[in-house]
Length: 202
View 1 (cartoon, rainbow, N blue to C red):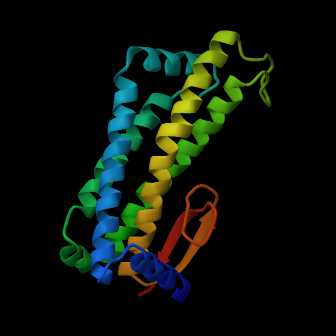
View 2: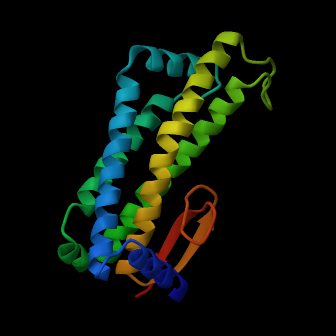
């Protein structure tokens, strides 16, 4: 636990904050800003005629899950949930910090998992062959998937990583996690890429 708090303090000092509260307020604003950007980006993608047609075609060809559009809608809904959970001021947030941040952590983890799984699906569909596929993707499939893979990697993934990193700073700063599990996917300051599963103490 001490290691996490030490890293947060280093970040605070390096950015010139004169109080720990000021650092946490900025991280909260970053989470809210990134959640808003992710939600807007996903909704903009789904509102476009060509992206929606490409997603539907890839799902029909079984390169993507049949519920891919619903899963993208779910990302936008989870971003709205994060905004609702973290909208209160830090002072009010502290009153229900553990259940609120546990819900926020679960939402961020679901967003990250969906982003990772769909990025991998686009990578397979944009390649010349795919594990488990009886036939290689057609040129049209490769073109659709390559465009969507680029969007996920260059637009969505950086926003998701920044959101998760800032949320983790808030979790460590406002609670005393009893334990956490780390998996690939989310950048945490002293680790490379990890996805967070948090267990709070009493």
